[in-house]
Length: 223
Ligand code: TIU
Image 1 (spheres, rainbow, N blue to C red):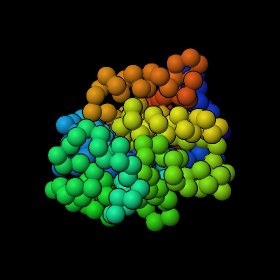
Image 2 (tube, rainbow, N blue to C red; image 1 turned 60 degrees about the horizontal axis):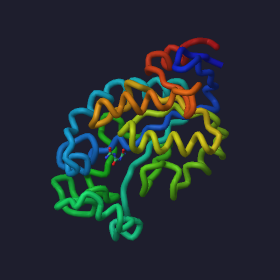
Image 3 (cartoon, rainbow, N blue to C red; image 1 turned 135 degrees about the vertical axis):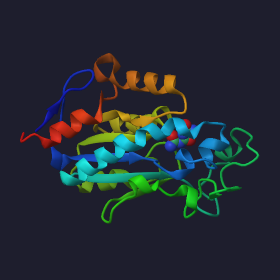
């Protein structure tokens, strides 16, 4: 069992019972013309996570760890889109509306896809989620249970929104969560820092925080 350097104290995990969870690394959040941009954000701020996340993904695959991807989005008929979520922000071009990458946050549209750098491989579950948390209204919990997963190494965007909501959900369900500081990102750098600090504060109230290098070194160790 590797035990890696992390905040607030070393994180121990078994390869066989740990999954890498990549949250919402979608074109709609990371490329111009999608939901992130519609909300007034600079999508470039998220892109610094792509390189480290790709290296982490390749290491997890090489170690034989389960990799799970999530995508935030809605049915084409928008029947799973809460009216409150549609209304929020009063956007001229919001969820379900036509943008440069197709209808925003709608399943099957170009913008809803995971960015090519982190495209899922055959056999890697992809969870389509209508909310911010990856457990809400999805079969993620069942998949983790059937695979015997106890720990989650979490990457993706955005740190304080979908990553945080998912880690909070996972923590309440009994999972040990490690959040990767260099493989997550926010449109607001100060929110990224605060969100990571909140995970590890109070003795790891939600889990652990580490850089991907520590995890990759741990996976390479014989332990
Ligand atoms: N707006 C924002 O920061 N995030 C989202 O809307 N979704 C995710 O974080 N995936």
